[in-house]
Image 1 (cartoon, rainbow, N blue to C red):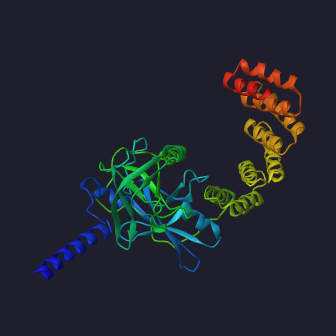
Image 2 (image 1 turned 30 degrees about the vertical axis):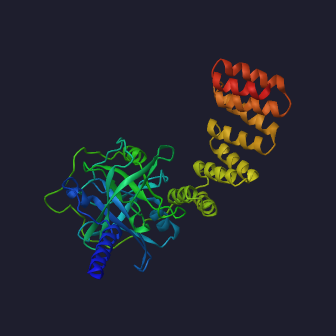
Length: 389
């Protein structure tokens, strides 16, 4: 009798563990049923059609605009011959027609395919997520069907424009839309190679919404589910987009964000090789060199950027600050004076100039900048006063 009782208990324990450890590919709420068709899969293949990498994405505009994770785009951009296509529900494959995003912002970028009347996701760009809130992640189709997984929001990191979720994120799920129980997309899952799998990260949509607005895409406030199949172009050969300086710049941005600085430097240099006056590439190179402690290289990059855009206050301040870090105080003073020649009321330049004067031992010059700041930026003035006193 005891043996039978023990056996029953063991079976119940095994059954309970099986429920706990089973994948959460659970029922999708009715509010999300129509949204499943907005999830897509993005594929990177070599020139012979051999698979390299896949990720997920979601349709943000019915005229073929799709948001996806920058990591997948970076893989496509990394090799000139590689080919990118998008798989819709039902196994339809379309080549990418345009890379819309000029840089990788918060791990998301926009692409466009040649199609009309696609089922778009309902975006909730200003939605305030809550810790412990139920969510559903819908990955792009694998074959004929998409995959839905339930989870919760574990924590929120407003500073990093991200939040942690309980659903594990693998490479192929990166870019998947995350839905609240109202059927609205509130974020996107991103796979970060240097993060532990348990730290599954999702990002907010405000930055991607800005990209959509800049592109001039029409944002609809309702879910579009066409009664007939989407209007697709006639079948054509998969093509590859010519990778220009903008694409290599985007690749550099993505590498920079993931801490792959050597690769980012190479990508920015490639963009500059193709477009020597690409000021943003020089600025980003300067930022990387600065982070790496390569101040001489940072100075040279900022000088090149300033030669192209001599009236940029931001570049002047970056160059002058790097001169200070490098101990080149007189060059810093000259640079901040150039900034003030462009805008005499720029408080950051006055503050930086005061620091540079102080470091050369010119307390009179530093105090003069303090007096100027008192009229335009008291907070900066108080900080400068505390430094020079």
